[in-house]
Image (tube, rainbow, N blue to C red; front, side, top):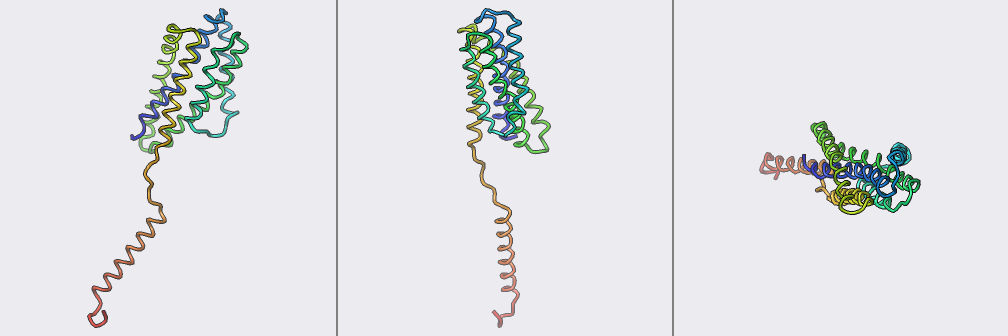
Length: 209
């Protein structure tokens, strides 16, 4: 399936960014804000509320790479929040973009694959999303261990931006222009007329040529 590999990569990175965001906010509340896991649960609830509202509030289709870029950009500043109410406000923005982002990635896979292999394509995408889910939390954990608790948000945001860049470069590929039906029919018609004229010239009596 030509072009499927970049889409699977985008799916993996998108899911990894979202999973890393969830992991990062839990660790950030506990480690940086020195609050309880219950407070982390409240922030996660705010993120979930944003995800639930994202689909209805953003019904307009947008380019996949743009949604991924916005998701990455709004995720990184969450590490600047100094108390959990502001962190709730920050993660709601990321939540609003989560559902539209995942749905547009799935829609792109569905549109760009032929019907004969669409089932295989969606299965591969599901595997890529699962791999991203498994990859996101360890990446956020490594980033937090290697830097500061806010580093988890930075890792999640950078994963989203990398997915956006990949999607943008993929969208810039212009497939070879296929001949339009009208031009094909015109060419066929011209060819038919030419063949008729040649046949008439061959079969006509010598005196009438």
